[in-house]
Image (cartoon, rainbow, N blue to C red; front, side):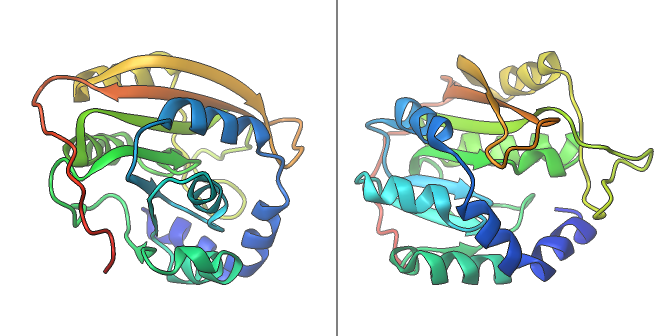
Length: 218
């Protein structure tokens, strides 16, 4: 993730985490359950306050929660101590430190829009690799809103990549994902100018890797 973007989350981790915990995410959580039911263990990219990982853990999922910001990850463990056993720092894009086919599901909420198209492609390839056969992927990205400057950054210095939905779908198809569902939702923090688009996808048959039962403790 671009250093200025990551730096913002690192510096503002405490206030951001508390804010994320107050968001109305009932619809998002229902979409996570619908897309990932029966798909465990899970990998989360950019766990933020740990909100989604804690919710899914409470529903019986095994979750490895990752974030590129060490400070944000500490906030997640502070707010949700049950995540401390498997939470770890992991930046994107990078080669994920997991064997191929390790996870039955991967999800990333408000993360990939911070990367450029080439890096989004690299991350999708890594997600495809670590998913087992017919593994599920859920991604949430901004559908509208955000005042982005000509340099592709907002007033906090965060990088944003705006792509039409058709381009997102093309990226998914080219990586080997099958489309399952799309949904739109209002912003959980009540920002009227921001809406969210969520994709549910399934790993295609470029290769078939059975789901193992890995030891998810480091």
